[in-house]
Length: 224
Ligand code: UTP
Image (cartoon, rainbow, N blue to C red; front, side, top):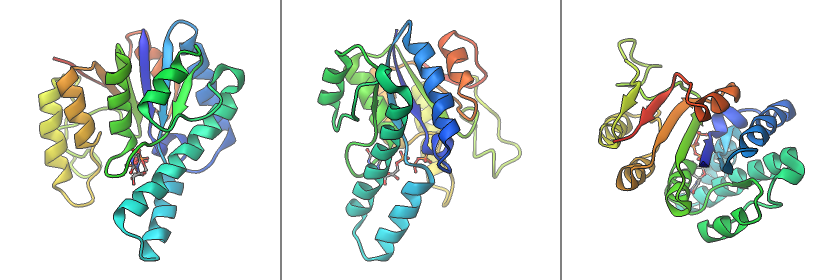
């Protein structure tokens, strides 16, 4: 299979932790033995810190995003270092270069691409562009819920849902200030237009990703 894994900064790099990168690298190497693998890394706490400072210094929002993108690419570099020879040597800066890098047969790791979105959208567009069979979104919650489970104790998790249902949920969640949407709206739209089979799961334990590749997981599957 061709697989894209989006690793949320909140799980890979909430705090910088060498062991976390090692754990992730070992799981990704295992998956890449039988699959073509692309990984997109989020920015985590460092991205939020840097964006906070640059915004406080008076930067416009696009500059804030560009600053965040740099941090996602730094995290990509850390994961590449952890993967060693199994990884393409640097994070591609756009989709074209990512596709070319994939021809090396190595694991390609990249961060953000353009202002106005998050790495969720990057992973969805990448999955579309390389014709991925599966997109895995490894995040800090264990699936997509009817509402934010951190705020609503009646929230129920979807085991499966359609891309259209995902879009509805994302719009509903994004309208609530401070709420955390499972994926960004652009990602949800891309997943819908190309019907990319997507699994949202808890990435705190990277073994969950291997289980998902093998068809066992307790996250949310999004497909028509
Ligand atoms: P993330 O994808 O980590 O965003 O990118 P996030 O919503 O903070 O994700 P979690 O919660 O850690 O999983 C970090 C920041 O980088 C910028 C945005 O500002 C984003 O908030 N970014 C990232 C872009 O502008 N474009 C991209 O393609 C990717």
